[in-house]
Image (cartoon, rainbow, N blue to C red; front, side, top):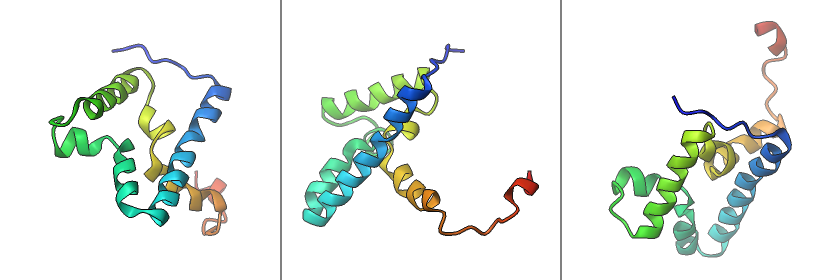
Length: 108
């Protein structure tokens, strides 16, 4: 029942590129130092929220709660703007290597 905030198209486009930047930074650090990349992967709040049930240091909990609060007002905030896994999965889809459905418009 909360009123959703509509993000303007220009702002949405700029913010949606942030997840690709986060993914590339994490990928680059994983090539350099895997332990450091694992610590930087804490941008994914699921370890804090689900696995450890918010029993962590306060910065991690504050970050996870801030993402939940943002998600209340902006639909799928984390997925749209921050999720590096979503960015990694979207990159091959944007390349259009696999064009199996030639009649995609006809499928409805």
